[in-house]
Amino acid sequence: MSAPSASSNTSFAVLGANGAISPYIIDALSKHPGVKKLIVLSRPPSSKPSNLPADAELVSVDYDDHTALVNVFTKYSTDVVVSTPANFDTQKNAALAAKEAGVKLFVPSEFGSVTAGLAGLDMDNPQVTKDKFAEFLKSIELPYVRFFTGPWLQYVPWVVGYDANQKINTIGKGETPISFTAQEDVGGFVAHVLTTLPLSQLSNSILRLEGERLTVRQIAERFNKPLVYVEAIPGPMSEFRTLIASQCEQGAGSTGWDHIKQKENLRDSEEGAGSANKLWEGHVWKKVEDVVSF
Image (cartoon, rainbow, N blue to C red; front, side, top):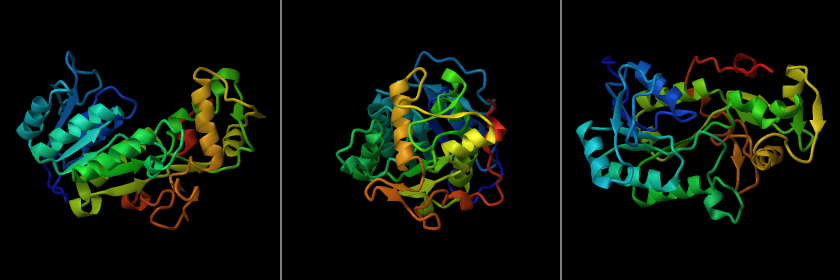
């Protein structure tokens, strides 16, 4: 982990070791030659997860203890903090400590559908707190980069309720494009850009990924499964699944979605779906068949 990097970011702290996306980010950072120090923060009492890379140091710290967080970030000369817990207060505490410790960049917990613009709208959307947190980062003048990835490819069966009835369920025509990205690709992309791009390019930026662009109908066709029209996506957490399906049917499943305009940005624009893919030149993005089997 000692090879020179094109970026000045060499010391990283990841909040959370056992989340759905954190292991992929931690693994990718641990393998990147530009990373000289990688710590993983976890609330006490904490034991080292079995899948934690050998060169990633687990640091037990109370997220509510401001002084303790400042001391950790200062001790390890942390350049970038990557937050995977989505809790607003947890992230706020980490951001305030990072600001005081001189951290250069904060990566808030996004890694999903577009949330930019939600804070200014009167919408019943559970992800509005993510946009409100980005506004908080602006207010304390802590540079940030937000990653919008769309739903993860590994979750396709869950999104369409296949686990409930062995069918591809849709609440509409199922013809609206959705941006899916594999968790491995998310982790790899995050590590790549954070260690190769200059801080000036990363600061206060939004990076929109799209591993594969699919409609629900295309998913059914690719796997030769029946497509059925339902009023609610079946299975555990049906209400939440149906909310996600409804948002995707309206177009918000695309990483090019604009909540203010209520439409998808042009795909060849800087705000278009997958517009950030070009930053990982030569990478082959995973397809749904690479990670999903029905």
